[in-house]
Amino acid sequence: MFGRSRKVYFDPYRRRRARRLPRWLLLLTGGIVAGAAAVVGVQQRLLPPRLSAAESAQLRSTFEQADGERRQLGIELAALRQQLDTALAEGRELGAQLDTARAERSRLRDDLAAVIDALPADPRGGEVEIRAAQFSTAAGKLGYELVLTRAGGASRPLPGVLRLVVAGDAGRGAATTLTPEPIALALGRQEVLRGSLPLPEGFRPRQATVRVLDRDGGKALGMRVLRVP
Image (cartoon, rainbow, N blue to C red):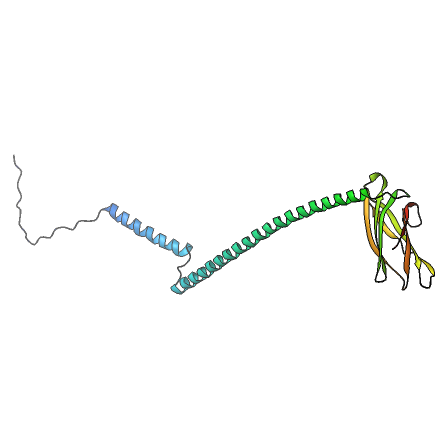
């Protein structure tokens, strides 16, 4: 019924048999070590080398210098923007002043046109009327101001020439006539002409004949004889 029993001997110096590590643990540990080695190898081959302390300090110094330059450029940019804003504001102000000046000029032109229209008509009439004239002598020159208008209120410029013939005394009662070179014109509806002519020494003008021609030696468009004071 019972098998044969074996004798059990007590051995106080008997050592326990050492346990072997599991195979899976060995494989796991080996994989971890191999993976770490592979990572280190990849880093050494592909990643840039680590900087030394001196290189790190140099890199930091370069960065700080570049950052300082960036801040300085930012300050300069802000100043330039301020200057631009100021210039734009001044430009707007000048534009407003220009508009005001143009409006004033237009008003003065209208006022001048009204004054010219109120002047007496040229007694001789003609396509171009000499509505008014003023002469003055100073420093050996004859200054003149002439107001010309065109019949019918035409606005397209009309080419022509102005001829002045000045009669006077050259001294000792000798009568003399001066015929300066013709002056080219482009006549609008109304024109105010100003200029001066040189006079010979001792010449005293008495009378001026104003002629407006379509060209030198051509058709007369208007004429008026005026006294020189």
